[in-house]
Image (cartoon, rainbow over all chains, first blue to last red; front, side):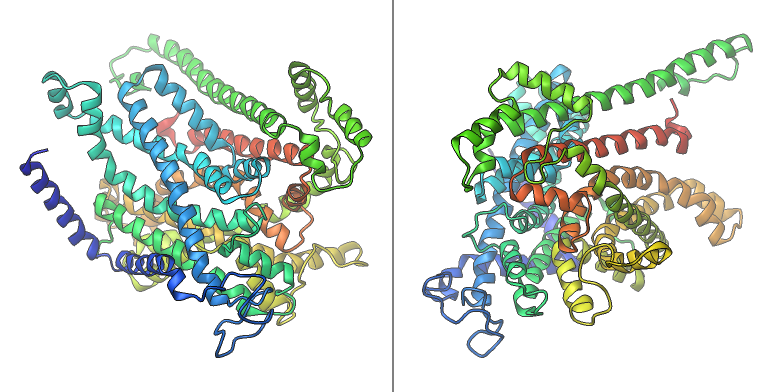
Length: 294
Length: 344
């Protein structure tokens, strides 16, 4: 890779950023995300050692908010704040890994199908049709029920059921890119399949993939909380969805223990909203038609 | 599609009938392809369901009886009931003929045919989901049109913000909050169920409506944002078109331009989305029905999952997928009627 290409790429990124910055909602989302990522990374520092311990909890069960526990305690006597902090790890991990599976598979198959066309392409379209028709949550729930309850199952279930959307998007974009003259030039100069796909198609597909990625992490986190709430997650993992489920089990609804139900839900809403706002801002930069005209 | 775009003006009358006949053929082929595609999808779902629920778990009987005191004889009996002592091919044949006769076997936890259970729970779900779709579509379309027409205004930004936030809310959590605030808190609405006991005759209608308010609000809140966003962006797209400029230049009133010219065109993608969504909303009902103990298919699915009651979950899996396929097909068939440009 020569210096000229890198300078051009740096310029593109700088231009992208200056346009992204103009979208206030997008910047807000980015700040919220940074805070959550930081919280997830610093979880062991922010919370005491026995924060997640059920046998040696820091407080007594189901305490209301107090100076020691600003958001009260859960059914085992663990501080709600600490649970939320550790829950951000679970949610972000599931969100990123599920999206990674989904985006990698989707991009790979999308580019391959778009580049080679032919029966492979039609086969991919049939397969994605089939995935899109099946309610992905139903398939995911069935998979999770069949494969046992764990975080890995949830990650795989979300990844497997969401990649077709990306594959379709990437295939369409690949077809659009391959119709451009410079691809013909690259082929005429002797560029092989791999060269065309990795050096010409991929960089042009990446922006769309980036927008899709951010939107998908949000969806994946929402889906994870749903699965956890349905009791398909690992019962020992303190994810936000699982905490809401535990609150319901304990009867927090009828006894109105708001501090047990409210915080995990607000955390989910904030993270999902942040990813959605960032994703929409990226989309807006890439597609000026979507940008707000003022 | 392509040949209809060719100039046809100088073609004499004689060719007209020929074109008509090929038009009918094209139409038949379009509908045939859509119908065939749906049947293929349905078959794929039936196939998936067989492998998903019988092959992957290894031994379904052990999965089902996991953590229960079940004797070896009972397990053997269950295996015979399931036909697990036969070969895979034989199992598949009896499964396939069963599904085609709408016979999904007996539920493990209720000891009743799955088909009967589904029939019992069908209408409450249709009532809840149907009403929620009508309300959220009307609300989403109305707000979307208003937002796009006054895009960038304060009300547009507020509405978009609210919609995006509600879209990020987990429906089960919203349901719980609504129960805490309005049912167990303020006591305005019942916390669960569809009917009060001992209410008969015409009295049932207001009673069911009263029970339905909170589940309905939950479903509408998480769904309408999608309609709003699609309608809004689709109308924004149309607003840049030349024909809108023409309509305005003719001196038509703003309202007429919007109602007669812009909205009908922008409505097309949204209508498709509503139909496609209709199938998926049924699944959204799983959570809401569970939270509010609404006696519908979603709650049935949840109760099947926690056992796990494989015949029940399998039957509902096929039913939910079939609903999506059917709605997709309806959208495909409806689209050419709504939009002359894609008429085959």
